[in-house]
Length: 142
Image (cartoon, rainbow, N blue to C red; front, side, top):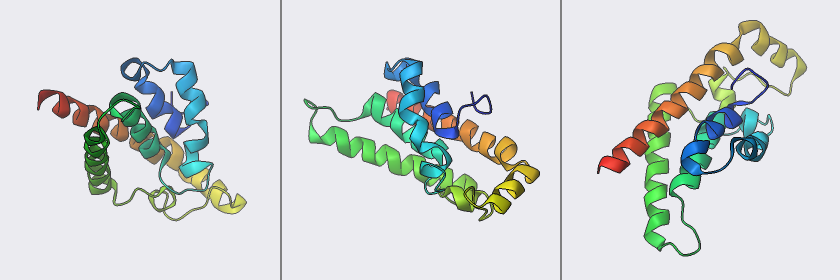
């Protein structure tokens, strides 16, 4: 989905629609504000927030779940973040794009010239999806 009019958060979150039970169209809407590191503020990478929303949708604590459920998800969240940082040095969108700002016209032009969305952001989407899939697979077998 990434690069076809959908942002990083949408692409990752919607990829887990079958597992979460949330319809793809609804997933796309829910994840929209998380793209570009929360509305292009370049805070936490949208691929990361998309993956963590998917984790919550699948494994999160609901009204009738025990408190331990929340602690288990927190642990999986930390494991996800540790692996993402190990691969990419940061969770921060701006850091991942060499400090260039999406909100600054000149710097955003530079992001496009360098093809960072098509190369790096695409890789972050793919790897966030891969990391979460692996974590969930390990969780099922343990």
